[in-house]
Image (tube, rainbow, N blue to C red; front, side, top):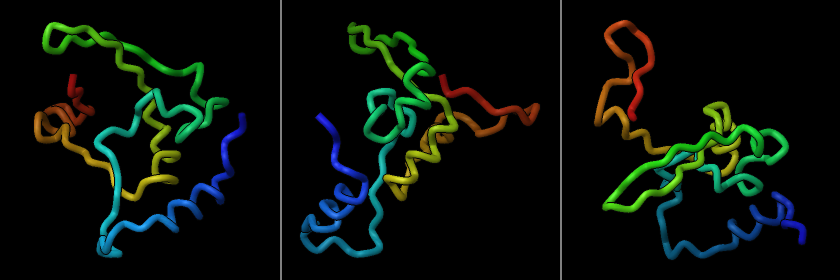
Length: 104
């Protein structure tokens, strides 16, 4: 089964009735590196073999998080105009030594 072309998908989105949403409203997500988007947002030939995983525990349940590399963001912005960056709420972008901070 082949996916519709990007142009066909954009036409379908353009035809969707957003019920009077202001034209300057932009849509995005709170995550840009979700491994489950390979072949939807991220090309599998570039990222399928570069997915990192880590186990997380929440509410007594363990789940595996799959992430694509940070450079995948360029593909993200081909589909979404906005990306929520909320990790600065929890810690600064740069540590005291001017190195990028980790939010996990």
